[in-house]
Each structure stands twice: as C-alpha cells, then as structure tokens.
Length: 277
Image (cartoon, rainbow, N blue to C red; front, side):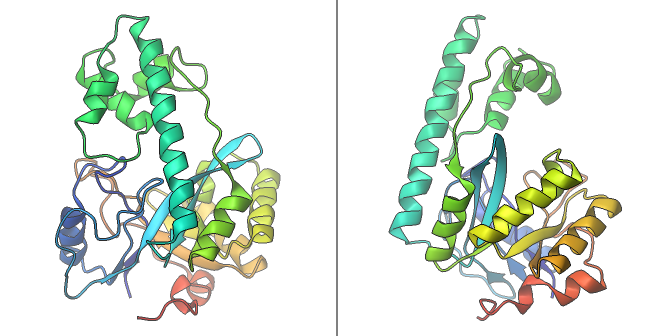
C-alpha cells in the first residue's frame, strides 16, 4: 500500500498533465492516486485515464473559510457528477477569476499589463496567486516567487485582493453529500497556535470531517507527531499526500511523504469503509 492522495495537475496550479502524474505514480510504485486540483474536479479530464497497476480515486481540493483564515479541504471518493458540489466549485472558480481580474487592474497601475490574457492561454481552470507570481517572474517584474508575493500578492502586497471562500462547514457538507470523505489538508501549514489548531480540528469534526492529512511533503517530525495525536484523540482517519505540483521542484515528487507511524497506520484512511474498489 503506497497511496498519494493529494497532487495537482495543470488544470489548477500544477505544471503537468494528468497523464504525466499517472506515469510518475506508476514509475514510483504508487498503488492509489488522487489528483486533487483546486476547486475543480478533473477526474478523467484531458487524456486517456485507462491505467494498470494503479487505482485512481476521484478527488478535489477546496478552499474554505474558517474564521478569518483560508484552509483547504481535500474531498476523496466524491461523485464527480454531483450537481451541488459542482455548482459550488463553479462559484469558487468565478470568485477566483474576479479576484485575479481585480489584481490585474491593480498591476496595470504599476505599468504591468497582460495578466488576464496570459492566464487565458493556460489550461488551468482555477486561477491562483501562484499563476500571478509565475507571470510576474516570467515578465521580469520580480526576480522570484518570494519577491512577487512580498511586493504584490501577500496580504500587505500592492496588488492583494481579498476573497471570501465557501464556509468550512458548507464545504464539508457538500463533500459528504457527494459521497466523499472530507480531509483537512496539511494542517501544519496554517500558521496556527496549538490552541487555534485544536479549534480548527474541533469545528472540522463537528461539520462532519473525517480525516486529517497526517503526512505530506516537507512535513517536520514534530508536526507529524502532533497531527497523529490529534487524529487519534478525535478518532479521525489519517491521509497521505505529497501535494506535488512541479517535477522541477526536486525536493518533492509523487508519493514523496514520510511514512505513517504505528498510531497513524492504525487510523490510516485505507481502513475507511469507502476504501473499496
């Protein structure tokens, strides 16, 4: 059992086609793969998905509003055709497009033009700030992503535009209604205190969330242990995902995430009743 239940294709902010991800997964000995693009279901989109030696799981990663914070919820085993879930995702993508269009207008004030036309030439369905950072670097306006975010895209950036995501409880509800399992993605990346993280997990559980992502790319041992303890205390399943985006980022790869410890293995998501093929 070697699953990777969190990765991205070029339909959101990844760099590669679904076919590339599948080939990578097979080459890396992955047993189960979920392509979880941001706010869009790309299940069997863009090529031949008939594969051997690899079980594909329909998934999505959804941006959700929790208090004043953006958090990400992965939905696994969803019905890709569920109408209510797809309506919400369409609304999210529209909100993304409006946000980036407003950012484009801000950038034009600094003599930086062409963002929207650049994005319209890409295969992505969900526009992100990462796409804007890429545009700024490619156009020579910033030397790297860090500078792009610091100068323009972070909360104090010159072109920052706020966005209101779908509420956490509504995201979880729609995933469950679509037959899916809601997973709180990379809980250690939200810059929360232990108390705040406990509050997030508690509200996630109260909404019907069933799993925490207990291992992901670049997770540190202390955070991994904390998430394992929280999952055990809340009787939650533990998921695993690389959060892979780009093969040129040599520190990450499909399936590259630390192995679960004994406690997390006991609670691993492959013990969930939905894990039947």
